[in-house]
Length: 126
Image 1 (tube, rainbow, N blue to C red):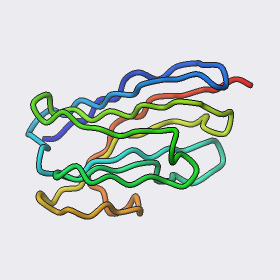
Image 2 (image 1 turned 180 degrees about the vertical axis):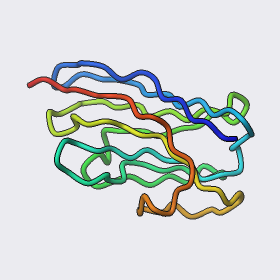
Image 3 (image 1 turned 90 degrees about the vertical axis):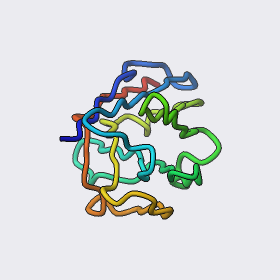
């Protein structure tokens, strides 16, 4: 059974940085597209960033140029480096992965992803 565990969230001032980590267990996800979504209070879960098994990346327009997604397949871990944080980045951030391996497409719809972590809170104070 695949489990995803996020870490690295917290409280940071606007303009600051955080690095989120997502460690997978249960099976290797080195061949699976993985991503980050976020959900703010009263809003729907939205795509933030994704990375394929061949390290193609995609970002939401709202985070492009500020966030960087990466992966370490040896550690079965995906990261989200968040710089120049804004108050509107405040949300619970979720790590996710698709079920199908070697699928080099980054999907923007949360329903396309099978595996989810519990989420980590990111709060940006202005």
